[in-house]
Length: 267
Image 1 (cartoon, rainbow, N blue to C red):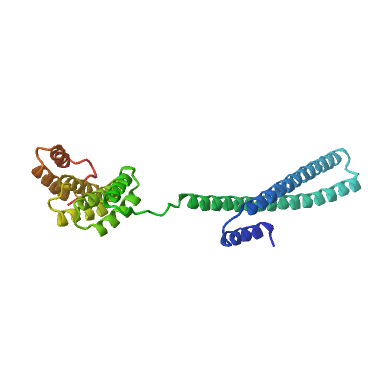
Image 2: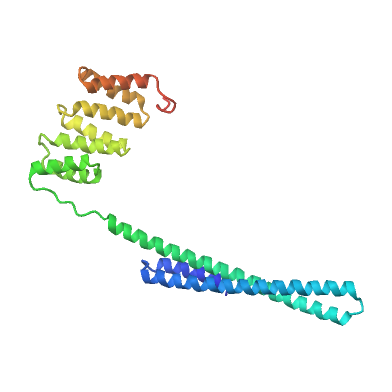
């Protein structure tokens, strides 16, 4: 059986057998070094055989030109050339097989190293368990701090627990807004709209109403729904015309009126 084929089969089996260890990688490194030495030795033999073949061919050509009667010498040189040619072909095939086996072994080494790195990255990236503060004020402060640090997964985890524990608290709408804006910042406008609409339905007098309407407008723009974006920005401008957010909403409406290519989906 071809050694390169065996190496490929071993590669597939090793990747299915579980996590790579440093011992496995060290063994493969030693194996690669041995294969590289074998390849170098085979290459030296190949060069020597090729040189011998060329020398024999030169002697034969010279003999043919110099003396047509030296038939016995010519036949001997021809036989030697044929033998050397056969050995040269064998050496060529052997070198090709070694190259394939070395490439397969290197691929296995790289795969093992990648597997070790992924395993280490997963272990390093595993977040610590979330500690939910027992005090309500501390709970809100932790949610707000996670949002400020752009740790949006933690902010959502803390936020959901806050909403479940204090559904009618005067800070609950603020928590929902933080969760909605986190989704918007992550480029998930549909999720953001779900939370913004939750504020409108459950907390119509929320102190975050201006930011909520503006955020809805931005979400619709991201979805290329300029018609609903204009409605949301229009509501924001109408309710908060004298405030900075109302003026910014007006500017967004003007931008929608002259959209850039691809900004609005065809109606």
